Length: 278
Image: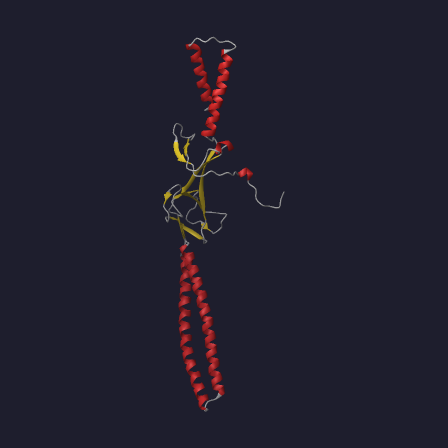
């Protein structure tokens, strides 16, 4: 822009000198040069202040490293690199057979222990009746204290077994819920609309829940913005909601309309965090 203004002013001065046949002397030439410095300098300052621009900008987007929550062998990868996917589309599947077997085993154990708890309840009712009869005989004076003590101890033992069995059932129920959750995690879905990049995952590979080794990278469709660096004096005229224009070197001649989302008065070089080192 600066060069364009200088060339335009130079062409204008040459035209005026030739059309009006102004002589070139020590007065006219310095006047034209000084006038150009004043006019062009004023225009540049006004543009920089009222029309801030930045030649240093970058396209920022949010990426999500896809890490499975369970470990297993990959059986299917239906998604393709850079393929647009919708939220909930399947990205890949892990062999679910070990997790299904665990769910089935815990389900069977839970059913068996539930039946055992019902049997204990029946035994408790029978033992309570025996104790009540022993108490009635003691009240009439024809029973033995030993019989009452034995029946009461039997009731207490069954009650303790029931409490222990209930705790076992609660533990098995929690394990079954975790196993069902792990089974659901064998199918990994897209977290939102977007596309997948760095897709080297293939069926037969082992996927593991290790956060530093994601199996693919997911790019969200709506998390995309251009960030520019401006001089401090230019930021005085910037505010959220202002109209903006974006020009890309790779697409010359086209101007893309945009809007300022936010103005951040902080930058990475000035960032400091609390630490002990000097």
